[in-house]
Image 1 (cartoon, helix red, strand yellow):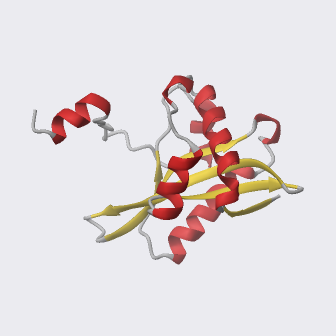
Image 2 (image 1 turned 90 degrees about the horizontal axis):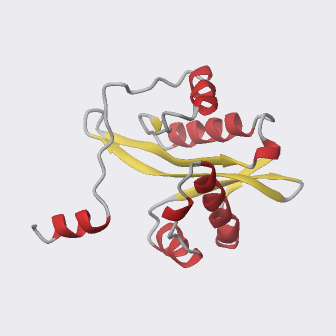
Length: 157
């Protein structure tokens, strides 16, 4: 089992993992990402990074993350957007290994925290995260503006 930074030749695998995760989360119809979009935003604009988990050279999972910023702490944090391991490789320590690597990246970069969101119904993941010492932020609600609402807000409507 190895975990390494993703490179451009991993984009097909990253997109496949995104689609598999979306299927698991019952959101497959929401995936509009393409390899071209991922290349642009990850490698040209540097908006996100990914780690690839491998077994014998085969990609079996990924973690996609980016920096956020805490005004209270006055420094960046690492936000884990997606963590996915193919079902047949779960229970082997990949999730823990990905999170350890992300924690190490955060520490190496001087970040103040590592954060992520989890769907309320995803009990196996919630239990796993709590076992690692993660604490849910029950006092916070995530808000989102997207699609037509985003366009309307941008145009002043």
